Image 1 (tube, helix red, strand yellow):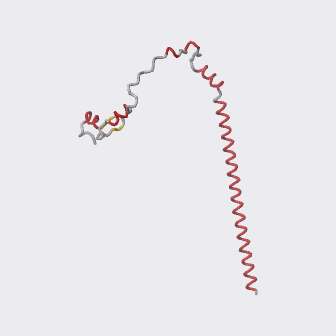
Image 2: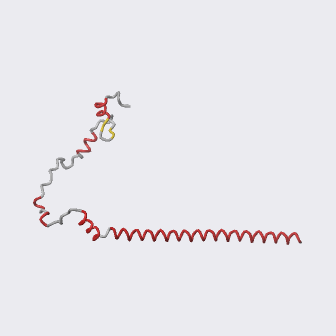
Image 3: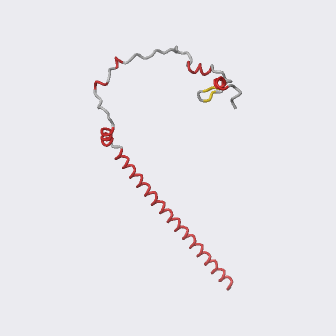
Length: 135
């Protein structure tokens, strides 16, 4: 019978230690969560402060004052605008309706053996350097 009592006492001590360990882990995690919440609150406050500073710096009246002080601009007048009748005519379209895109047709006519990189093709580079200079 004593062995059963000692075994029960050992199980109770083990269970108490296990519960204490779980409690301590949960306490540590709770503190970590609270610290994270505090950090989030600080970051939100910092963001709000930066937004308010940006709104102050971006205020139209402030920008107008800076422009008047540092730029030599003249105010616009109504005489600076022209009427639509004085605009030049629209340039004529050289492509007939229903025909393929002329630029696309030029791209399709390019020699497929020519490798184009940037604005210089291999053939053009060969004319400048010669094929033996290329490596």
